[in-house]
Length: 150
Image (tube, rainbow, N blue to C red; front, side, top):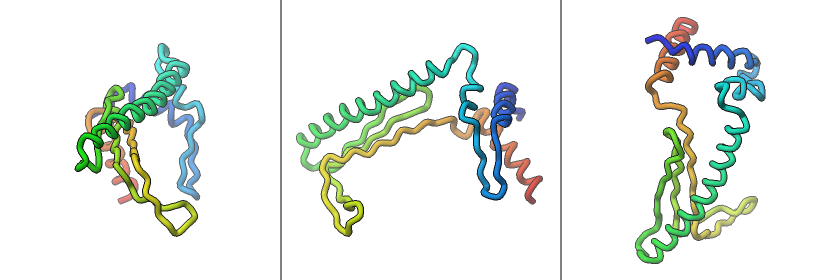
């Protein structure tokens, strides 16, 4: 299973922007490395515009979902939580859990308080499931590591 040449070419660009500290076990990337990998017809201005939209969408979706969840709980007093999710394009997803109440620690104190209408949010950016090119890359890295470390 050969890795797609586009992936290999992009990997080469990224490798050129990485530095490693073998004492600390840290790999650092150049600040503009993501931008250097963009196709010619996709600019950082567009990427940033999408990122800003996603930030606003998460806030707006949380507001709408929380309001709807609260009203749903008013209609059914037996519900302690309400769940929901939103597709964000590609395989990305925004998931939420709205809790009627939750006991929380007071920061810096040894006491708890009860908060009402607590919303937990997860924004999952799925770069890929273990399939396709990512599966090929991971398999190759496993083989190379076995040869290097075994």
